[in-house]
Structure formats: C-alpha cells, structure tokens
Image (cartoon, rainbow, N blue to C red):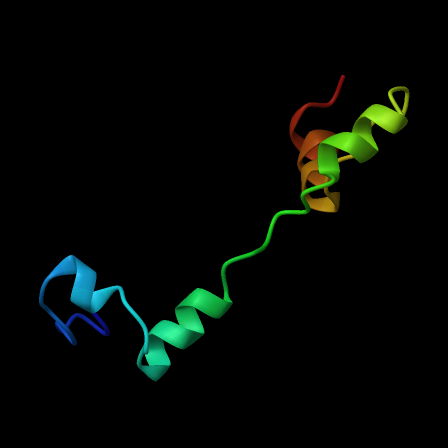
Length: 66
C-alpha cells in the first residue's frame, strides 16, 4: 500500500522477490543494520554502561524528578 492505495498484489514469492520498484528500494534501504560485534564490544568493557539517549535523559530529568 502507498498513500492508502494498493500498489502491488500477488503471491508472496513474486511480490517480495527482486527486482524491487523504487518504493520498495526506499523502504528496504531505510532498515538499519545491526552491528554484529555489539555484544563482543560490550563484553570487552563490562563496567562501561550506556548513558542512554539524550531524549531519555531529558524525559528522566523532567518526568522522574527525585
């Protein structure tokens, strides 16, 4: 669907097989890739903790004041 209209229909194997139209290229290119070494890097520095996002820090500061 695109803007509330069906743009393609058919068998799953046909619709989800390359070549993809421009809209699908855009959607597929927007999927983030996971860093495969994230766990290895985390285990190398067990005492290091993530500070979280700035948005979370803002919400934490303004919503959960101690």
